[in-house]
Length: 348
Image 1 (tube, rainbow, N blue to C red):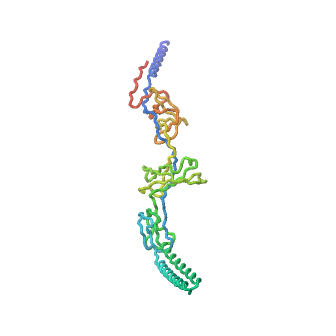
Image 2: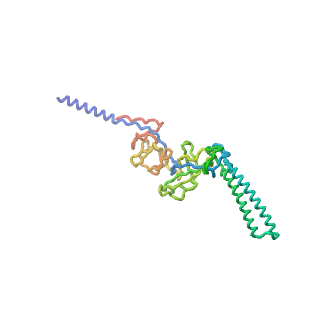
Image 3: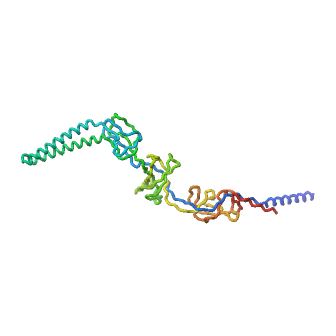
């Protein structure tokens, strides 16, 4: 019975020795990508959503109830300042003007006659003063008739682009009916709100960038023109107005735009996002030293354009693992992408 037991013990010891030889075989160095720590520009931006407005915009309406006799603009066409947009019927007003002008002429002639008689002593001062008042009244009636005609000629108050027509020649429109909207969109006013807590980050003249859903790959640059002096007590936000040049009229009033205000810029150390390892609130990177990695805790800042700002914990020029950190632990050997694998030492 002793021989089988002895044989079993020998076999067990032999297997144990084999296991030790297998454990002694070194692990191959992990293949990673690495690069020196450099610097990049980071900026504290204020993000908001704004609405585009025309530089100037007016709705031209009919001042009186009358029939349209002429329309002098095309759908979406350009109109110059002072250009006649529409003309309303004015036959009755023209007749009233002619009558008022005739009365004014007659009153003036009568005034001249009384003035001559007064100079010769045949007219009293009271008669002369009465005729002066009559002449002035007649002239005022003529000017009133002219103003009434002017109300029936609608002109563009500034140069811009007209809206689509919604009325036609011959239609009778009531007072206040819109005839055309004229918009100056050579530049765009962009209104957006900024929280009270970020008010210190903005100032007049500050550069902004805005993006519209219509042009997602084309950021529009501008500058802050005005900051509302009053904070809305309901939203605790302040309204800000920026001006965007719009020479090709790509932007239209009413567009919703995403706004980014470039508040403060600085140069800081930066590493790719894939180089940073998170453990709760702690952030770490792997520094390559003498063929091995050392896990180093760092304090991070902003994340922009695929980079993470490093505030402290490392120095510029240190080589950091930029890809392959998931397979690393502190102190393990690594080899760089493109380098030859180290020759494993023979097991003893």
